[in-house]
Structures are given as C-alpha cells and as structure tokens.
Image (cartoon, rainbow, N blue to C red; front, top):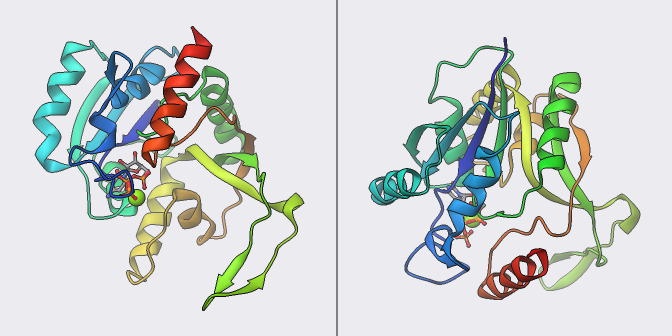
Length: 230
Ligand code: CTP
Ligand code: MG
C-alpha cells in the first residue's frame, strides 16, 4: 500500500519578513505559525506521515513545539538547505520511500491550507503522478528587463502557484536528480523541477485564503482570516 507523506518546508530565514526569528516560528493568534500548518495536515485522515524541514539551529525548538502541540504524525525533523530547492531535496532523500508513495510538499508559511485541497492533491497525484495548486492571477503580470517593460503575457493563461505540490516519489526524486546536473539553476518550486523531466503536472484549483506569509502585512491578513473563520 502506498503511503501519503506531507513534507513541510520550514527551513527558510524569512529575509523579506525581516524579523530575527524566522516567520514560521512567530505566534499567530495563540500558537506558532508552523503549528497552524502542521495541525492542518495532522488532522487529516488521508495523511499518514509528516516530515518537517527546519533550519539546523531550530531543530530542537521544532521538536519541542511538535511534542507540546501533540502533532502525532511527524516521523522526522530534518535540517534544511541554503535554498528551498535544497530543503526539498533533503526531505525527498531523507526516507526510504516506496516508488508509489505520494509526497505533498508544502510551505510551512501557508497555514490556511484546506482539507479539500489536500485531498484533491492526493486524488489527482494518484491519477497523474504530479499535481500543483494554482489560483488565477488577479493583476496583469509584466516582465521587466533593465528597467523597461519586456512583455505582458495574456492574463487568462496566468496563475499564482500555491502549495502543496504533490508527486509520486519516483517522479520528484528523478526531478531533483536531474536538476542537480545543472546546479547553477535554482528553482523556487518543485513543479519547475518536474517540468524539467518532461512530466505533465495536473492543475488543482487553489484558494485565495491559502496565502503565504511573506511580509509583515501578510501577518495582519492572516489574523484577519482567523477572525473571519471563527
Ligand atoms: N524554505 C525552506 N528552506 C529554504 C528556504 C525556504 O524550507 N532554504 C521554506 C520556507 O521556510 C517557507 C517556504 O519554503 O515555508 C517558502 O519560502 P519563502 O516564503 O520564500 O520563505 P523564506 O525563504 O524563509 O523567506 P525569504 O525568501 O523572504 O527569505
Ligand atoms: Mg525564500
């Protein structure tokens, strides 16, 4: 039987957020941001195991938080890398996965992931091998080069990428290995790696509430989303 793993990437430093403590450890309402995210996956029947990636200097903190908040499905906490891609690689290589296991790779900084999206990721990955979560772009997206507008791709084809991005183990493992052959390119998501192997990736409808906390303003928005939910 294949197993379903949630890989929670919390290995970043939150440079754009600008706090000395990385944003995933800051308190959102009554608990650390990372705990909101972990609880969302831990409470799902469809998730078997959770692997958490954290900065090395926060591994003790994260273990304490996991135990204090009774996040029972965490089987491993592993150290992150210098980039998101490296953190994802460390997680994909961290365990003796079976070829048909499904890995849902999710940003720790997205605490409001819904049960429905998680289950859609699992279902579509079983069918297609790879799936990602997207919402339609709201603004006109423009490519700028050297201070001038270069191109404006038609908005109707443009989406914002969210997470989870989910894959059968063999697909994401091969994608990481291929990406390592050109180490000068680093990618900000896992679907980019998988596209590089020629594999198709199924689009899953996302949710505008599935925000990524990037800047301090996002923290205010997150508090507002929590208030609205309760
Ligand atoms: N991440 C990671 N390892 C890294 C970099 C990022 O696991 N080396 C994780 C972050 O912790 C976050 C997710 O990937 O949950 C999305 O990344 P981002 O929002 O860019 O977070 P940071 O890299 O921490 O922030 P910044 O880019 O502003 O430094
Ligand atoms: Mg980053």
